[in-house]
Image (cartoon, rainbow, N blue to C red):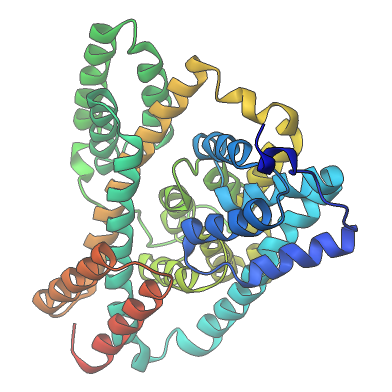
Length: 398
């Protein structure tokens, strides 16, 4: 055993100090999950040695195959290590609180100051086009991480096709998980089943290719319970990163007429520049759809799984990754989600393109933003390119 391992012990810390420590991490959580995880590793593993490096790496591997924002789940897990499950709850709340408060302020400003004023239409459209570039880059990054063999690629492409033609999202999720669980021993059966599923999906939904959810009128009231369940669905299906929550929250909010695709993209833009897990965009969506109670309800739903998996399964988290059948099924679900996100990108891009009066300029803005997020690194990149999109939208007709 090396010195780092032997010296790794849970800290002696009061509940108040624990909450304030993770509240500080929350205020510093800029730059997305990679930067957030690196911050936690540096502070709690390298400097304070709450756990050793090997255990941290194993824990991170488990959290990456489970739903929920990994950085937030790490905070809950560290809190449990320090002060039990109460400590985990306080650590998770501390980490998410700054982003929650800031997003509520941003949503209030958007609803009561920005939305509906003609001056902001151009800048907001420019920002939405940049957000599409950020989403596209995220899809590629997630795909490189998750689609490790041709079967997973097939599942993702089948999921993409099924989503574009309007198949309910739960069908490809179930199919993807089951098919990849079978693929090791029954490749021919899995491939044939996948081909049949894709063909059936194309036949059933061919009339709705590349259409966004209908937003003419709300088909379901935006109640507290409905918003909570919309968030819960997104929280349970965030495989491979927070971007995977986007299609599920969009289907249950934009698809029910509670807000437009343009407003939805604005919420993602705010989330990209605040110190918080990206899933905090759901708070914005909930505020627009249902005011402060709606914002709190959807936030509770989307963060509940991130708390629950660590709080309930703390003693068994590292053992989960040793179950190969479960791992294969989760890998199939994750591949399905990649296809669903890709389809959502095309649908959002189609909705944004329909609003652009100068499609050529909009495409140029998208390409420049995509090149920036593809080549540049650092927490400053997203805020800078969002500002670039807003500036272009303010001075040029898009």
